[in-house]
Image (cartoon, rainbow over all chains, first blue to last red; front, side, top):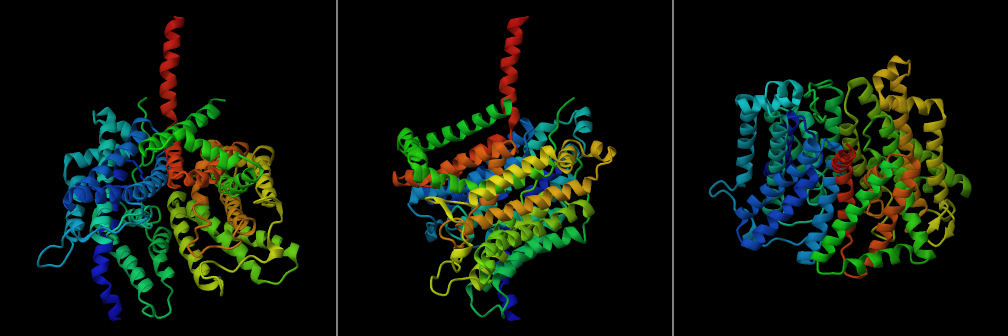
Length: 296
Length: 342
């Protein structure tokens, strides 16, 4: 039983990337744009964050670089999805492939290794006195911010408008393309933060497969959340807990009481299938989700 | 014609970006690509390897294409491929006559792939759950399930880093070099699905649903049946991709990190896009990817990391997402021409 408690500190860390990437995607989906390239965004941002931290010897510059990289990849996806009215799913698949390839190439080219370790002075320091990662505190704050933006500001109302009925929004003068682009960039930025956290704060390395599926768990979390930022925070903690449990069980032999760790790693995905089967059923997602808008 | 031109333009874009990166990396792109071509097509053995590498991609691409023809976005080939590989290998534990064992392996693998597609169809039809979500989740469940079986249940007692080897009687016999008769599985599946989609009533229904589900329903087509069929047949095809990778290629086993199965399922999406979701186009797209995969090793000897190939593939897929980019370009040129005419 105590093993389940021991997991808690790791679970708080594991919550961060799954929640941050999901929050960004929640925002984007309210605006009507799906981005399944979260895994790729996290991979690339983790790399550029590490690179910037390494080059400047300042981890916070690294965090900024991760944020900007995510936003930039978001802009690429948004340009394809919104301006070129491309296929959002294909673009996402491509971003995942591209991210894996670029980082695999980059780590090899720069450091001559597949997963170079980052030295201690490149890590994000813990919050003094608390022994916690600053990201663990930042994550709930960003959930609050995302909720506030979406549901308590005029901007959020418009963002939701262009996701639900872009033509109506267009008719009353809301700039559909601009808002959709903005939403995807915001989403990319949060995915970039998640990536920076992975390399600079949690795992202290970079590699082509660093997120190890967490971008997809974040997508599962988005479905679980029904696009509610607070539920995404809760889901982030739950999925993060199982993520952490799987890691602990894999590393400490005999802890699992016979349950293979691979089955623990399945839980977020299986749980999401269960949730879509039973609970949410036909949850309401924005009407124009995934569809490009073409002015008649 | 226009579609083929678009595909070729995207391939060219991918190759160009690759060349730019090679230049930035301080190597000569011409020499690098020459090495790639030499390694992939330089002699009969190289060509056999290239074709052999393209065979599973044909099958996973067909999975995506079947879905796309029905208007679905089926990205579940990866999970079905992994399970197909594990099931096919597991048949090696049974003692059956040699020929029968191979047939049983393909049959059971195909069944497993179809079964893995059943929840996708049910969730889509009964609960309105997007196939994108359900296939992503099922892919990962399959990934961890396959990893569990490979590491805990099927591992080799002597060699540590892989499963037991496929019994000799269950392997596809060699054609030439690395190329084995798994060739027949990929070609036959491509031809069968081509025949099914364009020369069979049910295949016609699948395409009708893909073009316009409302009109299809109004015309009396059972939409649910057509969608299920596209998903289940896709599952069989993807599972066979995994099966032939294990039964028809060295090391005739599954490595403990699943590396020799890699991302065959996801790569199939790119191949299908290049091939415009047409079985014949897919044969061409898979060959192109086979060239990249085989030639990458030779390019690696020249100091270019293998990951360059993934970058090229990624650029191609991203470019494929935005066909209007080409249309915009052409729109400008046609407008210019019209301007001249009037």
